[in-house]
Amino acid sequence: MSDAPHIENLLLIAVFGLFSILLVVEKFRPYKKFAGAGLKASFSTNASAFLINNVIMNLLSVSSLLVVAANYSSYGLLSSLPDGPWKWIASFVLFDFAVYAWHYLGHKWEALWLFHKIHHSDKSFHVTTGLRFHVFDQLLEVIVKCFCAVLIGAPAHIVVSCEIARMFFVLFHHANITIPGETILSYFIITPSLHRAHHSTLRSEHDSNYGIVLSIWDIIFGTRKVLTPKSIGLELIEAENFIQLFSLAFLTERRLARIVHLVPRKSPSQA
Image 1 (cartoon, rainbow, N blue to C red):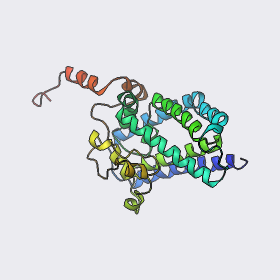
Image 2: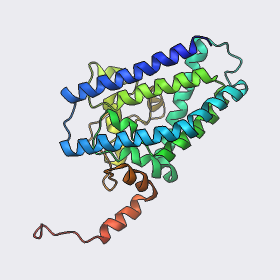
Image 3: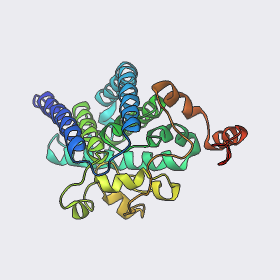
Image 4: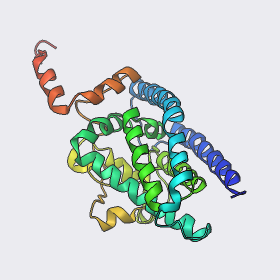
């Protein structure tokens, strides 16, 4: 237990270090160049979403996750396992599977997709896309993780470490970069190329590659797809600022399509 804060601090330093490195690599050696204006708007929207969501998460959710883990982890599956390497590994694997399952439901259950689609609304794909989430999407995920913390039986310091490690990989696989040996690596962990397919405009393509860290879940459950998407983002969903980002979650794509069709469009001769 005495080493836990030290491990968590090291993991946080690694996350911020990775974020900084990825920003630099994307700037000078991007996998794909996105339009300057759109990229700037994307960065601004994602950054504001992160800052506002982060304040709310700190006040309402992260603390509750830690309280639940600290008080009820003794009832879970791994509660009798000594606090050593095997408990850390088992906890990490089980949490990763839980997040994979939650991510899958976020695409398949329309009530959850309303909020999760905000993450997919980015027309660009870069490291800050990993910060673009609706606050309700995050709050629901925390509730699920609280339940998982009790079910798995991981103590608070392991829960925190797993969360920070997950943040590390979320930033990594949203990066607009290519990495050596990515094809082989993608059979073990989720890489940028795999997750880029997950952000395809086509739903038949973005309903795939739900893994966050480990690739094994997509392989086992047949949700793995290896492809290069022609376009990124969603057709009707677009947000240029945080207010739009928050509000769009309450409009279904069917309703948006109806609104768009009600608005007269210029014909090619009038354009």
